[in-house]
Image (cartoon, rainbow, N blue to C red):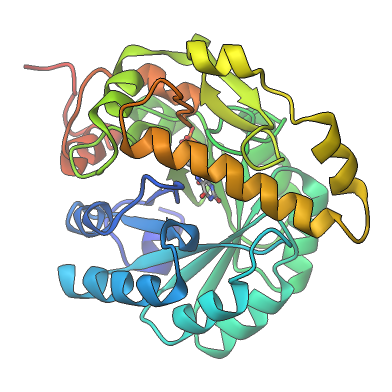
Length: 321
Ligand SMILES: Cc1cc2nc3c(=O)[nH]c(=O)nc-3n(C[C@H](O)[C@H](O)[C@H](O)COP(=O)(O)O)c2cc1C
């Protein structure tokens, strides 16, 4: 067998529970480790770097020799990056996943601490750049992904990056069953980063309404909106989403392009969009903006992470019972 993520991270199966804003929590990370995989949490899930420090300690106490990751947003919308990086560097975080920006500084600082850095990329240009900066692997975010999806399908993105890069390619997007895992690994992926099908897992602490929506809605109900972070993101096309529309306001678009004001416009969009998703994730509200990808098609119930992992590895079927 060729080496894969199991070799690098010393885990049983080559799967990462992808970082998910407001969804991934400590319980999910611990359950992932116990199920033989790993999970990564967005630093953004903690209101402050100090709370993140406390959260990571809970994770580290939760399972012996736990292998876990932290996701850092490395562009101008993240005012806490320096402090978050300090917390990561002084923790037992095994790997960092960078998204939305230039990962150079994060790579340099993490490598000094012996921590790996996997960089999100949606195309060859971004992937090559990250490789040049010293990334340990690329997370190839394809067109089927939840969150900030790419434009290229996995069947093209994975082989293309594999051929053009010398570092491993981890595939993210559109997988929800064992056939999906097998086929992406056969394309040459080093592992998979999987988000959407874990949103409604037993261990996640989101609202029942959000979990029920993930079970009830399917691939055809997912739309892209730029209202949340300014960057297009997949959400469930609820009545509320239909009502508010999916385009960022013309004023914000204009401001984001301005050299001086752009940073603040991006921070404001991120903050306001984040607030509405936070509300929907944790409370029953008419103003529901539920982030999810088309792979929710595969979700037909609320299960513990261990069962979802077994089904992804072809060890059981979630349909049984
Ligand atoms: C609810 C949700 C929240 C997400 N939040 C983040 C995030 O905070 N940071 C990030 O880098 N990616 C985020 N993503 C993208 C995932 O990390 C991953 O790339 C994606 O879920 C893979 O596609 P899949 O959902 O089809 O498995 C999010 C995805 C979802 C579904």
